[in-house]
Length: 93
Image (cartoon, rainbow, N blue to C red; front, side, top):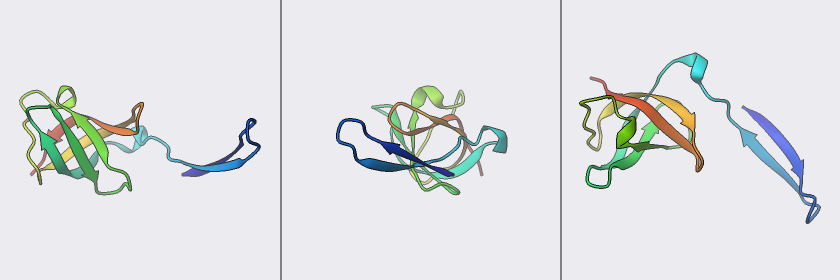
């Protein structure tokens, strides 16, 4: 994690951002399904080692996987347009 300090040129205020690097070199993450709506096809995963929930869409599930609240999952993390998202999601024991 690193911090970025940026001065806004419009209002001359200084902003500090926490930057979290992607974990692509660290392998898959593990977590618990917090919520998943099969009709709408999306939900959220609470990672074990990360402070921010990850959005998950049915298109990012490994073929044949169905998610339920409380399932333990393994997934890769990517930064999406609105935050972190889980990809290559599979259920683990």
